[in-house]
Image (cartoon, rainbow, N blue to C red):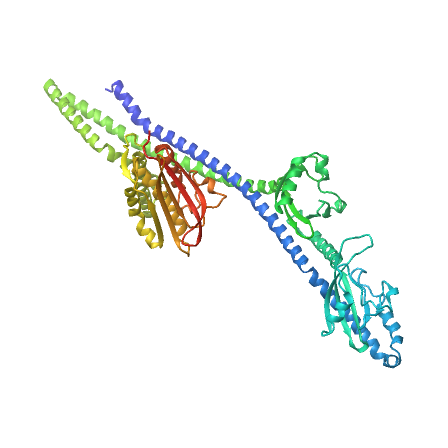
Length: 639
């Protein structure tokens, strides 16, 4: 006969374990699903950020490459001009020598008869876009040939000066006195009403056979414009990616190079001014003033009525007053991101499918195992019922029944004691075996996995225990103040650090007044260790003398502790952030960024004091040093 309670127990035995496994499987599957989805979203965001970052780097590198090309051409302008002049003068000189050689009979009788032949051969010669020509003088500075100003021919110009007062022909004759040829510089005004002086580079060469010299010259600015035109033509040909090109504007923000020829000569800011977009104009002018940088703008995309976001990189070209730039529309990059997101989405879908398949198979397997275990337990329970019933039937007397109950009670108490003693070990074993069993069922259990899992659990438990203990001691409410002296505290501090300071050849100069105060010595010790450890780390890789100065003195009712070094100081960019939590300039394996933050917490909140850091330049033994100085101000007796 089966009683109601026994029937309920049988139902629990039969369905509880499978139901529990099913619920856990659903929970775990749901957790992994949403965790995977979260990872996918995070990865998608990282991909988008990476694409934008990489594309920005690409446009910056491309502009830098064009900038380097322009600077190279710019810096070689005068050299190219000189090479152009010398080659032209050599050609004309060779021509004159040939004329003289083939007309010896004329030269022998009258050199003036030779002049028309020479003049006819060079007077109409032009180069450098029609600006260049040749002039010829004799050794007394009398002009023989001047294509631009024929009225000067036959006149002596020994006293002719340029705009700076230089006697140009005297200088030419002086240069050619001991040389076959020479470069020369002078300054002229291009027009009568033009009051500016323009540098001109010339080249002169002796014609010994006729006691003449020939020369030519060119304005550097004019030749530079030729170079600029060639450079702009080359820039217009440069492209990268699918649709990326370069834009060049002059000092007035007028386009001088653009893929759209219709924009050449037009102002780049005109459309923004028409739209009254002062913010965009300010962004552009700010970068142009800085010389280079990224510009983020929102305006109408070409051939589109929708506003698009564009990222531009611009860099100024000195001397020529150009600004070179290129950029990209973020919606163009978005297409690449969409393609990458599709790939990630497909991968995510595949992972979810694999997860579901594994979860379903694992659940089915666990259910089959649980049903099998439930059947065995049920059979055992029923057999136990039969045995009890048979025992009851065989023992009719009440004393035998009572004896049996007594034994069962004793057994229950014993089991309770055993259960109490084994509860914690069994809990640990159960947790460990569950992990091992899961790996076993997933066919992923290896000796290395088993050892690593065991080491990880052990190390993590120990680490957490140590950490919890440290913080418990640190924040426990029953901390007591003590009375201590500064000398004793620093003695304790250097008992930890002295060996390290010696190993790194760090000299400590101490000037410590033996001041007695009331407070938390252990916490002050932690502050001092943090500051001195930072100083040690800053000094240990330096090659020159390594110094740490410690000054402790009383100021009114406060103890002042100044600790400075000669490590070069803290960067002004980060000095305002060094007390922030988790801010560190060290590698992750060397620091957590919590030390100075905890020091500030201790000084300000636990000891009612102040702490700050600055850079200091000071003299020590007739030598200047620079380093960081930490100032700690503590009340001698807290209220």
